[in-house]
Image (cartoon, rainbow, N blue to C red; front, side, top):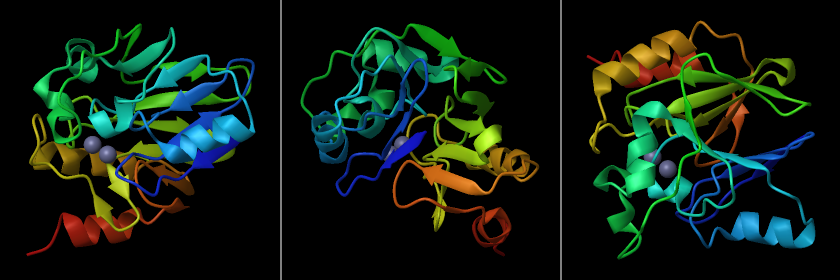
Length: 200
Ligand SMILES: [Zn+2]
Ligand SMILES: [Zn+2]
């Protein structure tokens, strides 16, 4: 089961992927009310966390024993680097130990869902999308929103890389997109590419 917890604050959205091991994609900010109130109503053991990238609005609420981040964003999370942008949210942050550094093509199997790691640099160098083929769903982090793409003016952001990431994403047959902010939506990648990368 995929539980979509849409945030109404600066926090990112969170997604709980249930199975033999329950995975939380992006806890969001430490006070993420959508996640907190869900876990209060429906206490759920969280076994692993996957962060779609290193930004504090996605990782600030990390907890537990098993935290996965792409290898290119992992150092920022573990050393509380400026790349996390924590200073936009809090005065101090000490980081989280990353227990698994993800790479392109990694598969995370929780017994019910298989999440494939697609490395989509551009918003940050270690941004990933997670594809659940069986359920025709992709978790797109801050790479792909209903009405736009992730900003590329923050540390390690790169517009050319983001364009390349979208050229790759266009090849993937998937319907349901679950972004890091805003509501989920049906695949609109041709609209996004036409409007955000080929404007002259
Ligand atoms: Zn974000
Ligand atoms: Zn971000």
